[in-house]
Every structure is written in C-alpha cells, then in structure tokens.
Image (tube, one colour):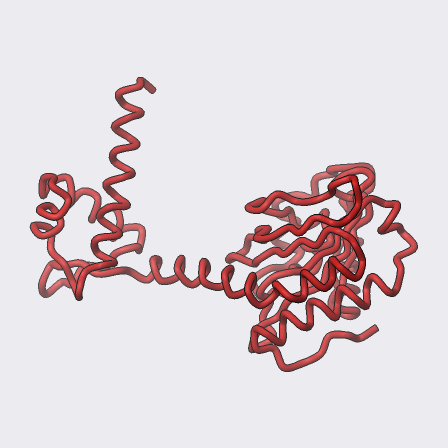
Length: 262
C-alpha cells in the first residue's frame, strides 16, 4: 500500500466516524444533505459511508423519509462499553481490599460477547510485578478466568473452545477436552477455578465469577502470582478472600444470590 493510499484510507475511516458521530448527535433523524453540509464534504462521499454503516447495522435508514438514525449495532456497542464501566466501578472497593488483604495482583476482566477482556489490573505488593495488560483478550482454556467464564456464561461452552482447538501454551496447559470439561464443571460447582502454570511457566491464577441481576456472567475477578504464592496446594484463605470480593462486586451489580459453596 502506498503512502497516499494509506493516508486516503485513514481519511476515509475518519469520515466514517464523523458521519456516525453526527448522526448520534442529531436531534432525531438526519439526511445526507445536512450531513454533507456539516462535514464540509460531498453528498456522494457521505452517502457511501452511510450505506456501509447501514449494512453493518450501526445506522438505520427510515424508508419513508430516507433519513438516518442510529442502528441496533451502535446500541449493542454502547451497552458493551457501559457494562465495562459499570463492572469497573462496582468492583473498585472489592479489588482494593482484596489486594490489601493478600498482597497479590488482582485482575478484573469483562465478558464482551464471547470475548473475555481485561479491563483493570492492580499490581501486587511483591517486588516482582506480575500482571496482565489492560485490553488483553484472554484465551478461555488455559487460564482461571477463562474456565470461570466457560462455567458461568450462558454464551460460552467447552464445545466452542474445542472447535478452535486446545493449544498447548505450556507443558501444563490442559489439552484434553474431557479434563477441561471436568475442570469447568468443578468451577461451576465450587464457584472458582485455578490455573497453575497453564498459560505462563512460573505464574498461576485463581478466578471467581462476577454475576449480574439474573445471575448472568458480567466478568471475572482473579488473583495472579508466581507459583511461590499460588501453588498447586491452593490456600483456602486465598479462595475465601477471592470469592468474597467477587460476591461483593456481584451484589453491587444487582446479583441477589450466593456462590460461596465451599
């Protein structure tokens, strides 16, 4: 791709976002001519972007007036973003107290459709920093958060993960579908999951679900540390503290039940 083509592509993307934002900010529906005048560009250019945005579901066209308004996909995207913000605010105190109690790194992840994405990481008190970068999409079969998501989400199941393949990330990664299914069932029964050196050698994690009003999975809360602090002989106090913190966040999101089964 040439530099000019690249610049043109960037300008095209910028105009698409400009069009979307102008429609979102309009008082009711808006037409092609108004958009072109506001954006100081041609009606043809605006129309091409409108057509694409309608096809992708981000805008909707009124067949009677030929004017445009936001489409369902824009509302879905907004809800996903809002849910991430709500999850973060609902979990802030629980994350802080959990880190203070155990001194370990705490990782908050949000379920976005069928993706599990890290939205916050609070590093532990150890001189060796162990954390997960915000914005990271987590694989579902090789970490504690993913196993919890598979156990509690109505949108996910082991069969979907198996279709993509259970890649061996380390020597300890679970690649046997039957073993993974058993671990997911155990996570559902006990309200938490562990992954010991499955994604990174020397690093382990424990995770618990954060649930919403109808017991739907909103996200996960996890402790991440070296095997020195989270070993295969899992300490009950770590599990208790983690599940208590996750339950606090769940209650803030409207969950009314209990999942402290152990």
